Image 1 (cartoon, rainbow, N blue to C red):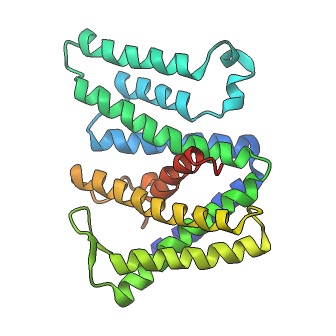
Image 2 (spheres, one colour; image 1 turned 90 degrees about the vertical axis):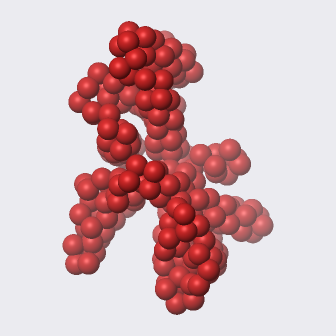
Length: 264
């Protein structure tokens, strides 16, 4: 427990400082975290990171995660993101033939979906910070996710009786889930009172509910992955906390949904 607390405090302080600094340092670190997250997924599938497939997968994910402005200047300005993604997908499919099916269609499908899952989530983390109100908005989203986790934990321990989804995550309860949502509403409205997020309180409430509910779904997605591949944690880079995906599973699932709903 002591190791978990120390790691959590140090990692939390460093991450908050990076968010405040923003700009290139934040972008570089997030790309690095996304790279580690992808390697964690490849390891689950027993695809070696230090292999041709691992290297191509990493470059493919980078094509997804890098900020939009990088395609507007420099050498990347000669390409569009969609052109590169299509090219990579064709390359992945060709690899199944060139390797005489030692790299299978199943592995290629896994890599493409994994790169999209990790790349899109961390991409919108970078893009959110780059917004004019990115700092306050990103902290708002993070506080909602953290308060959901805390509320669900304490409500589950105190009142939890009915299992939420035992086949995926045996310890989670319906009462804990509802407790997380109520805690997010409480913290989110307090945050909005001091740092207004929108002119409409209705929009703020809807956003809070979306972040809290979708964040819990993101946590279950990661739990389903780990259960399917029979691993306890996605990695061990954070002592007492597991891997990068264990810590960012809710956030990288929430951000693309907020983008689709035009909240970011």
